[in-house]
Image 1 (tube, one colour):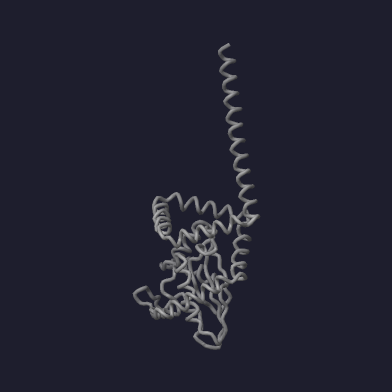
Image 2 (image 1 turned 135 degrees about the vertical axis):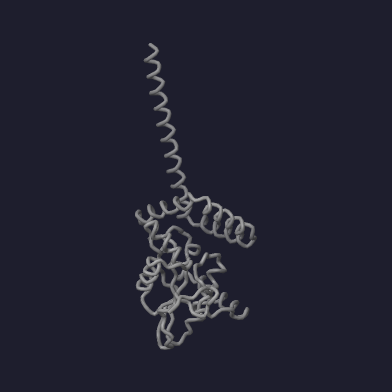
Length: 258
């Protein structure tokens, strides 16, 4: 079977493992960038499968390792080059009586609305493109309600905290970010994207509301205070070490002059 392209969206090659049998249960999943901590912005791909998400991830990795040239494959290849792997997460389980195409399209629509840089080559649903404006609005609203579910947010948050608590994950994440930010092209793109986002009053309001909500949590203030104190202690230690070194050098010079 030939792989489709954006100019031929009738079949989405990333969904070929999904049976069209209406009696099959399915799962919408996402592939996330381990270098990004934001639980929404880290999402780079939305897919659907009747297999386990772990099995589907292995298929994505195999496609990338074989030299796939889709946007998704190239993103995965960048991660592999940095000794990293995409993080797969379950999003929306479905059963035989629920149309999977609508769910996949709706999730892709929702995450794109949130500003996620998805690597999907089409709008989902095996290339079922151009739904009516009313359909898109209904799907987006349904996804917003689901994302407002505290249990759903809790699951994503716990997953992010678990990864962040792993020293090895933090080390690889830091190295990957440094490598990416060393590229002038990457820095230019990040700067342009930030300027575009900040130019939106709605984006600024969301950022302000998120910051205020985070700062209202005692544990967040405690973490910030502890980090600030630790940073200040490191700075003072460096200053003291520098002064000690200067004193030693000065003492050596004075001894030589005698």
